[in-house]
Image 1: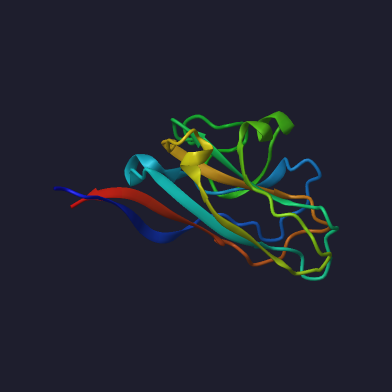
Image 2: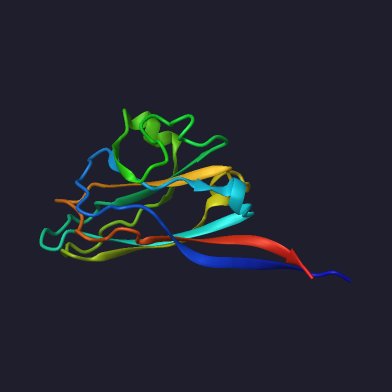
Length: 169
């Protein structure tokens, strides 16, 4: 009798660079990741995790947040962009809050202690769960924050993905 097992792929970096990212009170100014192509990966789900470090010398205010959003699409953003999101790792400012609200909020670590230079951990979350249990063909991240001051420098590629498939033996 064949047995199906969950198989986890290698943990790989997602190209995204929130280094020195400025604050956005409405979370519309942030950075997008490089597009992730699930038409070649063929994952049933992907776990995403990461970390973001606050400004080295400017303490945030308790209650401020870093927000991590996920976009999904059936076509590559190189073909059909979502507002300014084009699937290229870069700084972007969404046209308005409604565009941000069309993305899926995946994580929002909140400042609980006003200390400069803290690292905020984004614990693993399921991309498929954000889209009704099915992986989009193409997807990516958008990260924004409302801390006092910019985020720390030199923190590119601090997000990772682990693909999940099923194997039958």
